[in-house]
Amino acid sequence: LVCQQRTGDEPIPGCIGVAATGEDYCRPAEPTTPPTPQPTPSVTPPVTPNPTPPTSSSTLQVVFTGSGAPPSPLAECQGDCDNDAQCAGDLVCFQRSGDESVPGCTGSTTSGTDFCAVRATANTAWLKGDNGSPAENFPLGLCEGDCDSDSNCQAGLVCQQRTGDEPIPGCIGVAATGEDYCRPLETSPTTPPGPQPTYAPNTFGATFVPGDLSQPCDGGKVMLSRGMDCRLLTTAGQYVQYDNGGQSTVPMHGRADGAAVIAHPSDGGWYYTSNSENGSGNGGVGTLRFNAQGEVIGYQMDLEGTTRNCGGGKTYWDTWVTCEEDGSRGFCWEVDPVTGHTAKTNAVIVGGNYESFAYDNQDPDPDVEARFFTTEDSGNGPLVRYTPAKAAFNTGNKYDILTSDGGTHDYLVLNADGTFDWSTNESAGASSASTYFPNAEGIDVINRQLFFVSKVNKELFELDLAAKTWVVTSTVSGAFDQQPDQIQKVVGDSDFLYFCEDGGSSSDIHGRNKDGQFFTIVRGDGYGSETSGLAFSPDNKFMYFAFQGNSNIY
Image 1 (cartoon, rainbow, N blue to C red):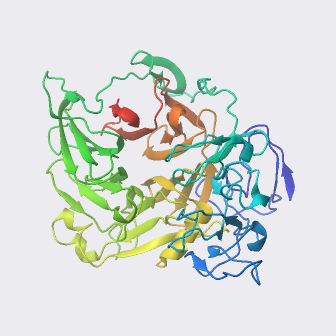
Image 2 (tube, rainbow, N blue to C red):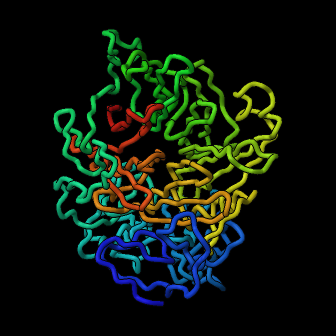
């Protein structure tokens, strides 16, 4: 190994995860022969082995119930452990006081039983005890819980008191609802984010300069890159105002989330279909209607009665697939804003916290018309690939493609050598997600390159579907330091990949060009909620996005 000297956020060849800014890391020496070509030349695929010992199952198993130490170290998802020393390798004992979910593991077991699991990073939220027990774990370290006061935390940390799922500054991962965690002291919480210091090159005489945040909009609530302008279209609970002077008959839905633009088949206009992440059966999909000039001429609810519609994606026949993030009750639904058609799809077959959807219809296999991909926002949520039966494409009804019987499901498994496989074993897919891409969100496919993000690791994965290779890069760059969410690929002279951001008070819209440079496209100085609903008009002249908190769509 050699020491990789860094002054900022430079990538570390052969390594994954979020590295500390300016810190130096040991990495493999550069090979003497050229490596196998990868989808992008900017990074090298990971070569480090799987950080945890192999296990036969990601299902929770109680294999030891006696006092003292077990006869041999416990494997991943095995219990009952009392401390980290009782876990194999680098596994850590996850201390539970109730029925908290164990990261990377599935199933249920006796309340309060503790299990060995993978702690992905030092700042991953992690339960180490409760009410001062076990004593050897107190005071608690960074992002560890459950604490009751600052005195339960190590020096320099404070106890973040939570009553629900409030974010924990400085921590990543899925924290247990209502549990309290030790976090860093906030040094400058009121300091506004600074502008991105570099601009995208402008070599074509265009007026749009990504990263030059010099154009205020909506009274300075939004700062835009030079060459852009904007206007506010909607607010939750208010009737949508039309450009012809009328207004909608129903108010704008709440918690606007994932969205897409669907072209009208004949009049040059389009539809902006927008998810509602409201819970308890109050979610769904609402649609804004635009004419060919980009003027708002309609709004309606196309899908109702669903729960926490989070992300989704378009089909190649121009319908919207919306996915529910609702545990065992969450599924994906097809919505056609042109005809009003809605149906539950077979893209996923078990309930989950599903996020985003994409398709690949360029597979050279003559027996495969198209395949469809769905991500899951869970610590061990596998990336699902659905292949409909060939007969589903031959009925003459496009709506049959995602609803007919006979299709197959398999799951993404990343290998440490930079290759990947598709497995019919869901547990293998869950284990790979837990190790490499927990809480996957946005996904897109273009020219057989599949892009998706892991929000807790703040990483972008790119899969070459033809070569079956993968690379990963960090999304942390300048002002883009929160969790990446939905993504959109726009191809042209710029070849930009656009990201929404899920990070509370400093969430913006960012882009990455084909050279791997990041730019802040839109900054929400007047907002304190995540950005969502990123989509483009059919001619790419209009960009739409939302600040989710009050469904302000621009």
